[in-house]
Length: 266
Image (cartoon, rainbow, N blue to C red; front, side):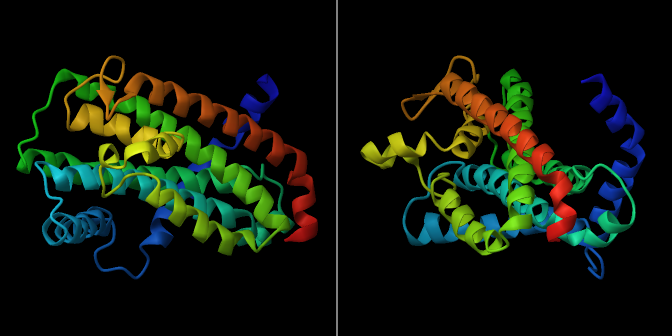
């Protein structure tokens, strides 16, 4: 373990440069630049709130905040998984020329997208203030689901970046899978209106993370004592944490086992 930690510390400056490079390239030739990180989720939320709130008659107090919580977390998961999946192939020229730990490539893409996600939380805070969402001291618990989200993103990123080297059709299949995940994450609908189907949704770890964030942001409750739609928030936190850790271990092991074969297939 010490060997891996020392290796990570040795290349931490390269990781930092890859993260900075990723942020710069993401908004290259964009006039708004990082401002788009704030505008895009806000504009998307306005559209979804209008369609599902006004047109379909599902508008309730704080509905735009409800949508934005789900939209931001899903977008973070979706964007990190997609860029991490392509990271090894995207950096094939560097991989063939110099040796650096290959996990730096998917990890750097995940980190810079997660940083942009954290910046977009400014919009969530502003929208909560505009709609006068009551806040309690339990808001500090938001870091718990966010940490779990990061672990899940790294886990899925390592798994996808490994498999995609050998099976490139995964890029197209993953587009369908993330769309399915979106509809199972209760971004723009309420789970309590689903009846028995909510028992299926609760097994989606991303939904559990979203629900925990909504608990502390919108309900002013605690992850450790409150319940949401008949499902214990504590259960959702524990389940999503265990799922993320297991997936992370699986991702690390799979990546480590196959990383030396990458150069033969990229």
